[in-house]
Length: 376
Image (tube, rainbow, N blue to C red; front, side):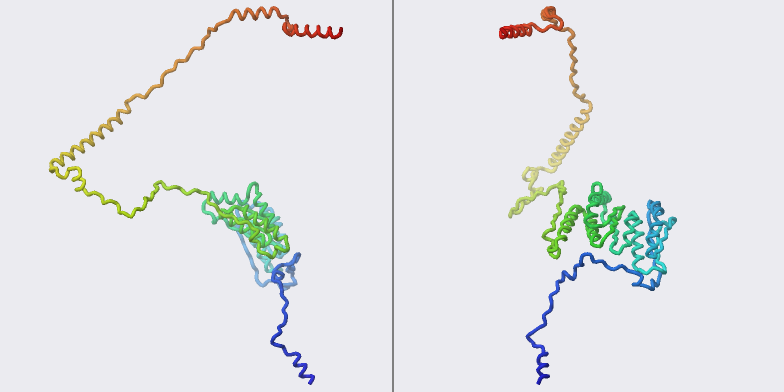
């Protein structure tokens, strides 16, 4: 009896189910802080590569001097990954090839990106970072996005900002190095930053000012610091900008004014016979009608001749002359007041050189007398 009891104990009852532990999906998706993918070593691929791979890219003439100067450094950096690099100044090209010792299959792709960045005016100090595992690059072509050359130059300048301030802000927010050169924008940094850089560049070429995207990036940066808000939807915090067309619509030269609606049809136009009946011309003879027409033509011709003659006579009418204003001669003779001069001379004789006027002398005398009286 013991055996069947044990069997009965192991039988699964239909009412009960095994409890499954609930796993948070956000924990599976998020990468823990400080985690880094292990580097690819020779132990991972001890036999090396089967075939030789190579990539080549052209460079402009103005980059020739710089590349010639820094090429030994490029070769040294690539030799660590067992990749050969050749510079052809006659053809104007750079070539990278794998060797028998190359063990990392992705090293040739990084070397290709390195020569591409060097061709797009990125300095060697920044371009060599592409050989690191956590750094990628993106070359955005902006030349064909805007048709008008003037508006293209303005929008490209808007991306740079005054004294490069907009570009610097974008670099700080995305942790990427950005180089605007000619018809391309080269970006170098982490994958998440490159995604944001591409969005900002394409929006700027679509006539959306980069300051709006910079504001959004600043808000996102602050929200990512909060562990509670990191897993939530951020749309309620992000600003929403509406486009405004400030250009006024050109007004047409001829404005069609709509007439007021009336249910009644317009009056029927009068026929030629109706007009002749109203004027009495219908009852005239053919000869009288002809005479009347000739008289009307002659009257019109006379008016036209008269107007033409008036226009011709306008050339012979002298223009109105401005009245000549005679310049008034400045009066040299001035009335001299002899009596006033005599009084001035008398007053001058009374005064001594450096002496005070009489009124001030009298006032001083009175003040001295008052002082003497007080002393007594």
